Image (cartoon, rainbow, N blue to C red):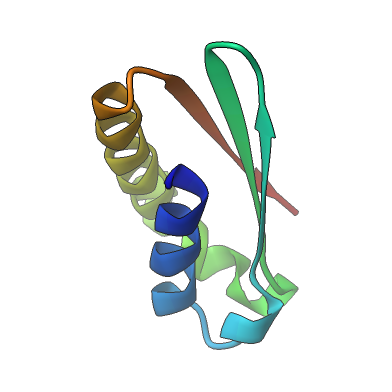
Length: 77
């Protein structure tokens, strides 16, 4: 569920939605979600002063709390 959420948000933000790759590494209580986009779209995903990335992390945190898990978003360059 969390992986699909980040995938949906990232595809809406970028110019090349076919180059969005989201992988999830699941642990017992923590999931690490890695987001990879095209070089040209990296700025759009991060946003000015990291605001977009922070907003995505906030949404992910709220969704993961509902699922009784902890999730961390990493944006891969």
